[in-house]
Length: 167
Image 1 (cartoon, rainbow, N blue to C red):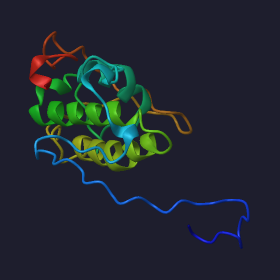
Image 2: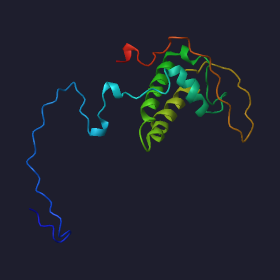
Image 3: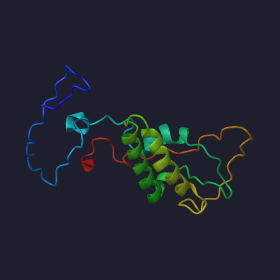
Image 4: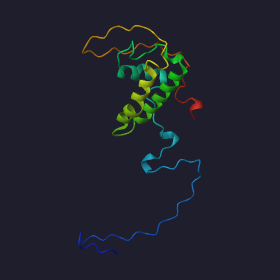
């Protein structure tokens, strides 16, 4: 036994047992780092939005407001016609769905590492909407810009939750 009398005279700390050998894990199986990270198919978190189009309309555009036009940002209400934009926003939605469940700084990480850099690239004057020249309404000083317009994505444009292609 270890001598613990200097710290806690009545406390006995047992010596550690010999470490047991862990069974070999196949390379194809994910190895959880903690028991808390272990999940099964039955414990898959429910998505807040069924697809990227619903997320863009329901969360992204109400939360990401910037002035459009000129040498600033550009946006097309039919954004889903642009493959680059559709793919990037689908990836952004998936990152949001994952990070919104992370305790503590999950959403802050989403804003810093995903939302701001991706949206800055997509809406830049030399981004995918570079040839879109529409004059948006003027935004008065000291007001929050309105949410950008968007048209609904056609049904089936994005995969829905539970789509077998997501497995």
